[in-house]
Every structure is written in C-alpha cells, then in structure tokens.
Amino acid sequence: MCDTWVALQDATLSGQVILGKNSDRPIFDCQPLLFFPRQKWSPGSRIQLEYVELPQVETTYANLGSSPYWCWGYEEGINEHSVVIGNEAIPTKSFREMAEQYVQSGSTALGLLGMDLVRLALERSTTAKEAVGIMAALIEQYGQFGSGVPTKTHDAGGYDGSFLIADPREAWILEAVGRRWLAKRITRGTASISNQPSIRTAWDLGSSDIADHAIEMGWWPAGSLSSFDFARAYIDDRVPRQVSQLRAMRSRQLLAERQGEITPQWMKRIARDHYEDTFLQGPYFDAADPDFHTLCMHSSSANFTWGNTATSCITLLPRSAKELPIFWWTPGPPCNGCYVPFFVHGSTLPDIVTQAGAFGKRVMPPMPPAKILFPRIPTGGCFAS
Image 1: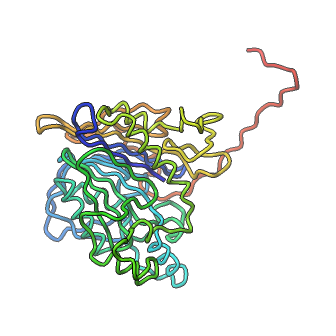
Image 2: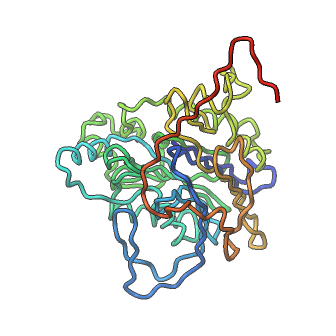
Image 3: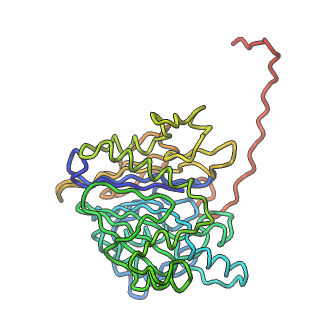
C-alpha cells in the first residue's frame, strides 16, 4: 500500500509544485536512498531489471530515489530536470487474469514492475509529459507482471501500477493495466492517488482499445461505451476497497483544507496522518497499534495491515532554473521520523542512508521475530529504580 499526492502552483503558498509520497512496504523491507549521476552509455549496452533486460539509452540523467533493498527500481524519486514520480500498486481484473494464467500454466511471461518504470522514466525524461510517453512505450512493449514483494510468488506479490508524475509546471496521473494505459493531465489544484484506479471517465492520452478490451472481456456493457468508466471497469472487485478508499479520501480532504496555502509543512502533516481530529479519532490507542489503514502506516498486532510506511518524501519543485528542487526524505513511518533535505544536484549521499544492511541487493526472507520475555509483576506490586 502507498499514497501519493500533489499540489500545483495555484494550490501552494509559494507558487511551487509540491509532491508527497508514503511508501508502505512489508515490515522487514528496508528502503535505502540511492543516487546515480548522469552517465553516458556505449552503443549496445543493456540493463538488467528484476525480470526483464532492456536496451540502455545513450544518456541517463542524474537521479535520486528510494529503492527497496532487493530492487533495481524506485518507490519514489526525482531527476536533475525536476521530474518527480511516485507509484502505487492497484488491483485490477487484468492482473487477476494474468495471475490465474500463471497459476494454471506457470509460464506467463514476466514483465516490468512499477518500481522499474519509476526509475527508468527518471533516467530518461526531461518533463512529466515525456516521462508519461516513455513509461507508456515500455508498458506496451514489455507489459507488467512479477512479484513486487520479497518471498511472495508472482501471482500473490504482483500488481498493476498507478503513477503520479510531476514537474515544475504540471502533473500527470498514469494508470497501467497489463500492456494498456491511460494518462490524465493536471494543471491546477491538487490530486492524490492510492491503491485503486483513479481515472474515471476523462483522460488526455491512452491506449486506443482500453474500452474495447474491457467490453470484450465482459468487464463493461457493450451498449454503454459512451459512459465508459475506466476505474469501474478495470478494478478488481474481489479486493476490498476499504484498504484504499479511506486513505484516498483523507488525503484529498487534507489537501482541500489548505487549498491555495499548502506548504511543505502541511504536506508532511498529511504524510503523518492517522485520522486525528476526525470522527474516527484515530489512533485510539497509539500510532504503533493502529485502528485503521492510515496514510502513515504501522504494522498491526491484529494483522490487518501488512507492514509500515518504509519511507516518505515531500518534494518541493523549483519556480525557475535558478532554484534547486528539494527532496525531503525520512525512513520509517513519518509520524516518528525526521525529514532531511537531499539534492539530486549533489555528487554523493551519506553511507548511512544508502546502506541496506549486510546482505545488500539480495532477496532474503525475513528473520523470525525474537521472543521477548518480560518479568511477571505480582498484582499490586511495583518496581523501584
């Protein structure tokens, strides 16, 4: 689970685009911050991702991103041209079909992960719209399929992708279902995405057969093409939406509360939210013992959440070429984290944020939790220090 949200120039106090992202991962899945400078590549170079190998482009731009310890790609990141991207896993009927085929045959071709697409676009794009085009071409050519969760099988740990892409002028929502996709341009106000399709009946770019395919598969009535609703047609209705809808509506509510006056501080407040000051009054006990699926996610002792917010970023994009973008980043749930500014225009990162423990970039199953024994305290008794 993840959440990504953006405020355009007219919605912020400084007149700058600000994007936020909470990356929710399994409790054991640490997420180092990585930096790669601009690089020239020899003709014929290729790049190996998790499950596919691609031809490398001539030049990759400097980029900075948050990468799960086992993964080539990013959950969120920024490049030297102030393009910033966050991704979401979305349950779709198209992925369900592929997962069922994989279980039955075991031979379904593997493709790209959403995290692959984030980093590939940052390495190759100079604007948000160009990033959309690059990601769309890759989706059409290689498709999406493969586990994005360590130790899970491809059918259980895979998903389709939703992306929020911004530059200093505009933002785009790109949603991909298998090898098909749609993209919606945002030039004013605010937007947020969560773990469900967000594009409904209007979009700006996309696969020409997106509606026809849904009709062919029986996911949309043949006589209702004029009212085609992408999210309604493609969402996997076997996945309960309370895990995403509450968070999506909460981020939109908090964005609307400060419309025209949004600051990086308010975006951090959104990232740290547990429904405080609402009728839900969460968290009822404490943030580490959650009552609901929240924007700031914590592992639940009742096992209804599947992990923690592993990292969070708030990215302030520049108003002009004279300013630098600021990538505010914190590891762990942001409610108890400290956002630190990082810059893609630097030359290196501190080792403390880039190290992934002793194992490095290898998939390792989580260690079993240690049992902690507490002394039995007699009724009415106390300890003196």
